[in-house]
Length: 211
Image (cartoon, rainbow, N blue to C red; front, side, top):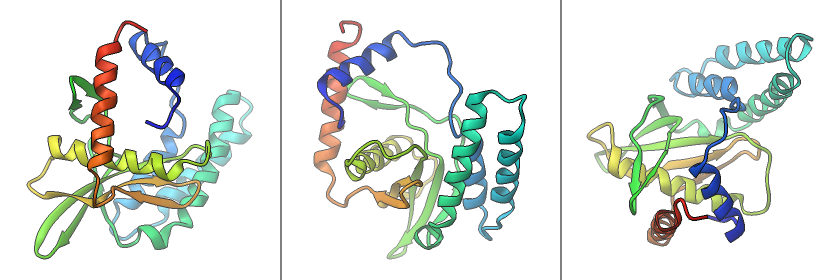
């Protein structure tokens, strides 16, 4: 949503003709974060175990440079997460399945995978939200804008693919920027971002296979 037009066309082209599978960064760190936050007691064991594993990996000469670098970066991510306890403590996180239905927007199937569901209650109404954790380094000055678009996409995902009978709530849909210690929730007034996402998908639908 915040990329240049040239970059957007490049993204469409890459997804139309996908490249061979590339190892996913932070995969093990993400699993540790999910295990920690979905534990109502917030025991440190998943994080401590993961850090020990990453420390061994960085010192193992048999590991590839990519895996060693991923381990070093993952330790930094888990250290940063520990500094977010005050911001995340009030949320009730629950496990989300790895496989989730795609979101259909303007004729385009969008793969949206929530890392965790979030349960809450407001004025007697049981509510649900979703969280996605961003691990990468800051790529520029538009983190908040990007985070709110991600949170909006999660809200739209729940509108179509709600796994419960709880009501989706913007305040519980969030992009968690772990490196920077920020939590970006879907704004209460969100129609502009929803319209932007639908418009972007209309463009993708029109350009698919032509760029």
